[in-house]
Length: 427
Image 1 (cartoon, rainbow, N blue to C red):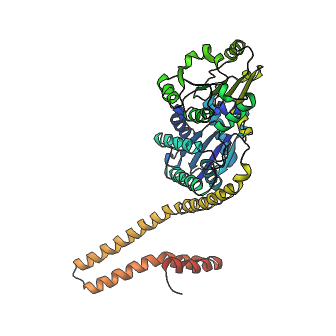
Image 2 (image 1 turned 45 degrees about the vertical axis):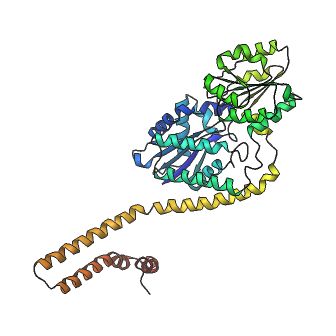
């Protein structure tokens, strides 16, 4: 069975490309089903697929009985992503990486543990991976191999986080956003802050900014009820997303992270807001992939726009303190990778064991039928049992004896070493 992880992430591709290949959360199940159909090699039992798509990565995990080369697999994945997202294969292909077998397992373990994140040790990725696996399972993408790999992935991530300090010194995107805003404004307590969206990342950012006690805190969301629930937690207010064009000028800090497939803040909207603010600076953070804020906004004077990539480069605190934790985590992961690969290797002999059981059962039944016929004829019971035992022994030994007889010298020597182990005989 071949395991593979193919994709791109924040180290191999810019956000401008990552946003184009990102899968919206509500389409992930459909995408998994499409991927399974795309990669189907005619044996549906052998093809397993799961897709992980976040702001920093889009990765396809697969298990297949098809023995294709790495280049073939990357090409097939590039064609799938290009076809699904209506992109150019030539533009996408150079940014993809492929990790086979133990490298794929090791990568999954490192991703879930926060070792492959833009912000080392960040905890959000584990929840995102669990959601991706749940949707893959609901779409029929998981089988024995990926199910086992991901269950071990979650166990490893839990072990890493509970036995090392990998998360103790991590700097979240939210903390980085606060730190960058402090470069623009002397006191955050004098600023009006707007959060667009109401998901986990916005909740985290709101927690960090609320700790700085800004002058006001507002949550804008398509669903007003969800915005009100979140705003109430931080003593803020809520507003509908439709009010944004008229209200944007009132805010000094804007943090956006929605699941929109298109930008919700355009250049014209920000230009009007800047004009109304009489050139007072506005700090904007776009944590969404695809982006919520048009990239052209960054060219405006008095607008300081940061994307997830920009925040990634800003996260530098605590690196020295994390090095020992990283070494511990890598050691744990390596041990668990070897354990999983041992399990994977053992799965390869399952069909052989099943064949042995079936062959043995046929031999047993044949000898038992012969014994019953002899007993029915009135033969002596002891003689029948003796014949039964000798018949079974002869049939079970026939294969090994023939192998020894037909083998050349080297093969016979190897068999001579193996057979005592197989039959537990003393030499």
